[in-house]
Length: 150
Image (cartoon, rainbow, N blue to C red):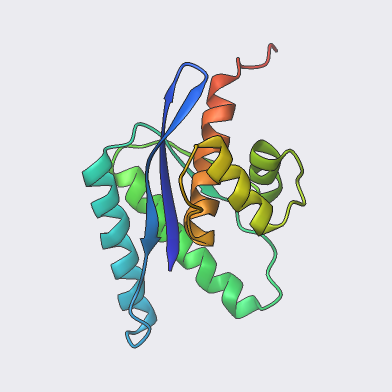
């Protein structure tokens, strides 16, 4: 399962477009679940036709097997985004949390609340969708900044 989030930026304002979760079938093999992930994100791209994309950078996981599987899934997502002609930015979880909550160690619940407030949502999105929207907000914030002078 992985979340996705799409925002529209008009000037300095951000507007919610869509969010959700791509679910895979637990009974399927790992390669089949990776294919489901690819199909799911490809459908999101085709439906919403984003102009930019970002993914959260891998964090150090306690379980090496989980970290490897996360890396595979992340690779599938990046490949699908690149195949759609999108450039892909990567942000660490700390940078994403700072962009949304102002604090790089903010708990998931605080990120969820801040995403809801920043996008003026009637209800809080699921944790996975809120994380994905936070990455989208982070990308928009970084894109809005002028490039540093050399």
